[in-house]
Structures are given as C-alpha cells and as structure tokens.
Length: 223
Image (tube, rainbow, N blue to C red; front, side, top):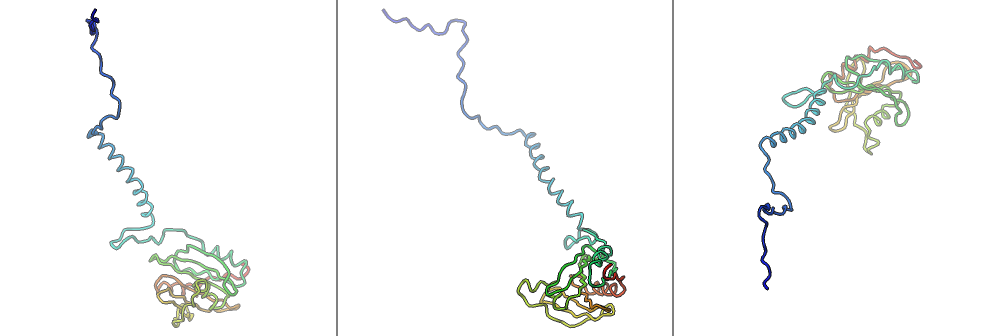
C-alpha cells in the first residue's frame, strides 16, 4: 500500500505566520523635529556654564578695546585704622594710619628676617594698581631682604638706585632689573621706625601715599 499523501492545511485554517525576526533592527533616521529639539537642548547645556563664567568675570572687570580692566572697587576692603589700632596694642613702636584715598584691601603683622617686626597695609589705587606700605623697627637691609624675598631665592638684594624726596622725607630707592621699586625712609621720632613702599602703582600714587603718611594719625605703642 502506498503512504497516504499529506492532506495540507485544513480548509478554513489560517495561513501559517512567518517566524519572528531575531537580531538588531535597522537604524532609523531621526525625524527633523526630533533632531531640532536634541540640538537645542545640547546648545543650552553648553551655554549655561559660559553664561555663568561671563557673569562672574563681569563682576570685577569692564570691557575695554584692549581687553578686560579690573574694577578697582571690587575685592575685599578692610578697616586699616581699626586693624592698626589693634596691632599697636602689642607693638614696640607707634604706628601711623595714613588716609591716601586708596582702598585698603589687606593688613598683617609679622617678623622680619634678622629681627624686628613688620606691619603692612595693602592698597588698591584708582588705576587698579597696588601699593604696599610697611612700617618696621628693623634695619633697612633686613626689611629689604624680607619684603623682596631675595634671601629665600638665594639671590642678592635689590640694588640701590638713588633717592627721591616725597612727603617731607628722603626715600632710598632699591630695584632689581625689571622689578618693582622698594622705597625706604626713616620716620621722625623715637624709637627709630622705617617705612617702605613698594608696588606696581606709578610714582604719582607713591607720592600721594607719602604725603598721607606725613600727616597720618599716630597710634602710640601699647594702643
């Protein structure tokens, strides 16, 4: 007998469905609207830190054709008179509190190499330069080595370049090649006290500070 033939799908049965496809799907090109939204979000994320940076810099700088200029009124401000009055309580010498019209942004007191004490006031001038006034009972050589930092770098001290008269005093001027000048004068009175002025400000600002020092209020030692 011959084998029965395959009857095939019964009448009325649904056609067999193809097996599900396994594997990665073909890449689909994003719609135009999706691309625009994604690009917009990316641009915003990039612009946020840039805007924050400009806001921070803009608080202390102003635009100029040659580049940003520091605002001389930005940054910390200290009450130099109050701080020097406090320093004078433990000082061996009287301290002068000049009022040159510059913004004082720092004060400190510390030892001088070779003996003595230095009391400092830092100023920012209207031109956004700075000046440092040091009052000390140390020798000129000692305060020069301390403030210039030449000893710590193993270098010789700045060289004497001459003298200049300002504020009724004669100031000895010291300077290294290409460096800022250090001007030292001996103040009237006893015990002997020296003043040093250094910084990036032009000579006119130095003279303004020297004049203010000559008429400054004096806080006696011990407060």
